[in-house]
Image (cartoon, rainbow, N blue to C red):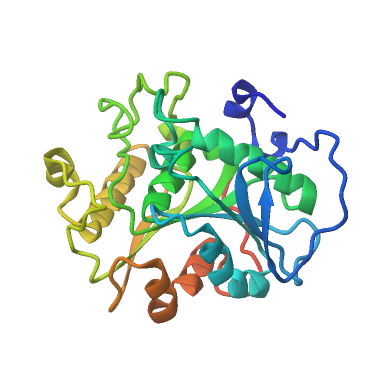
Length: 298
């Protein structure tokens, strides 16, 4: 298996590591439960569509604190089939990855971003998926992980959709991570490069009724003051700040917010009543059932 130090500086195509594994072809058209490297490894769910062509795109979908990884793979499978996209839904257990939303700081469990890299390496080997870059979606706590992973590893990511994250990492370097992108004692090896992560297109999707200050929301006075008091306000504040940062560097302003009518803080309701799955795939892959061209290299 590749070492964390190598993983931390690798492009996506360098994560592929067969480690001598050999097995028959994966079943297509069904949600598969797998463990990284075998019997005792980290659990992840995988959907390989029957429609997948040669080197199909790989999309990662990350759960929130309900840790409903299988539901992510299942509810996104119909769109995956339509677009010919492989869906990978990793499971970050509460016991092993208590800090996965913030990538896993020192003394708060293992690095969740490096854990995802190892799973991605296995999936690339098993499926022959496109190893240039991946697409990311995350809901709630998974939305926190998704945008932070893209900011930390922009060279691996083609695009991101963030589903109703509770709060965000801002692009200012004067604030230490996870509030900003300044150096963090909890992640001493991590460095953020705004000239690279601001090139990754990102969209936030949030329900117009997702305004409750529920138990899962970060209610710190600092976040309330800087980002807003609910998930809608915070999404708008983050996208605006990211666009301003991009504009100040003469870069494209491609951070946006889409509000789903009649939807509160529920991934399942977003899918069943807000066509969330359609919006995710449209933002990442375009309006037709064929992936759109990749953005310029970061």
